Image (cartoon, rainbow, N blue to C red; front, side, top):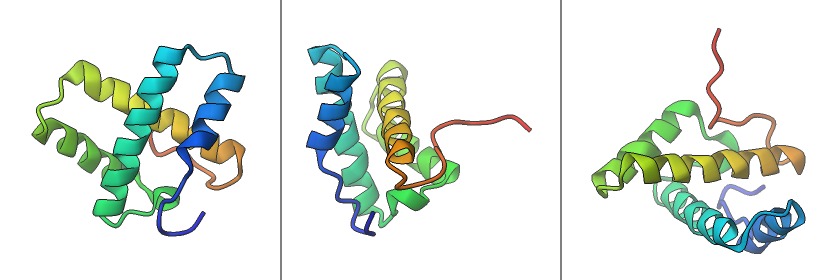
Length: 102
């Protein structure tokens, strides 16, 4: 994936459809993914190199927009799905939206 974070939302939509997600869920995931990608572009973060700390910056961005905790979690679920998709497509090798305990 190039550094400009261009990921066709249609790819995500197709993947969601193939995995039998509901139309409402697909609509939300597409919107949340687009929001994340726009934020990453604006902050010059390449999504394939996005760290957990970068994602904390994204959460702060959502908080500044007065997005509720419930909706922040929905955004993060979409981001986690995006990274799972990118791993499956071999465009990255880790999901920075998953916290692992050590």
